[in-house]
Amino acid sequence: MRPNEILKSSLIIFYALLAGQIIFLLISLYLVSAGIIQTNPDFSLPLTFVILIFLSPLLVAGPIIYRKLISKNFDNIKSIEQKLILYRQGMIIKLALVEGASIFSIVCFLITGNFLFVIITILLISLFFLHKPTLEKFASDFNIPLSQIDFSQNS
Image (cartoon, rainbow, N blue to C red; front, side, top):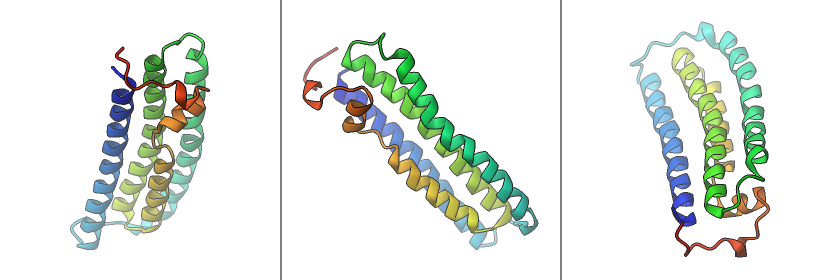
């Protein structure tokens, strides 16, 4: 695969994961506001504690796992294509952890009807945007000058 194809596939993965979260959130908002789903506000307090305990390690673990993955394989990989594939793998791990927390927050909203969980979900989706794969982030993470990345080469 060429570098631009690898980056495009990373963006497709990013937007697919993002769309899933947004669609699930919108459907959940509709189901709760229309009264189609019975909610139980009694679970709000316990689930608030659970989500706060659940969120902290997940949000810290994503970048740590990403850095370890890259540093472990940094010296073994020489080609830009292989580095982009490693970048995509690390990015998927970071995104999956944020998405997992976001989906859990939406499920908490479905259970309780508490809009605090919607706010948490919106914050997590905003955080998700910060992990959007870009060529600049790739170049920075792998210490490669942007001018050195040739998109016309075939691998």
